[in-house]
Amino acid sequence: MVDWMCSIDPSYKPTLEEIREDSHAYLLPDYENAPDIKKAIDKYLKANYENIFVNELSAWYTDPQMFPKMTYPLLLEWFEISYHSMVFDTVKEPIDKE
Image 1 (cartoon, rainbow, N blue to C red):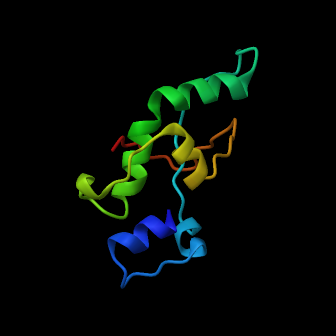
Image 2: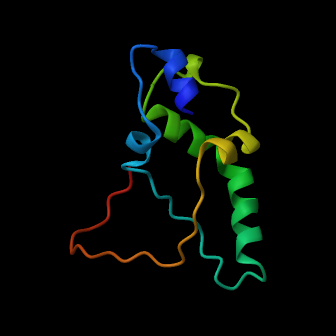
């Protein structure tokens, strides 16, 4: 991803640490009762990777003409996927969906 970003704007040279500084989290459906949670999540990601990919790239550049050909293997190459089964809301305000 860093190479792609530098190809778009050679004057901007972000480091991997800068990119990872404030990574995004995505809430997925509840797969607690799935026989194999990781397989269920992988299936979900394969079906929805394009929206996630576009969202991630749009955080850096908003022109879709500049985006690479997005594939599921490229998503897995460019982004670290980590699974967390619990999310805790510590704020007493309603959650806004953007």
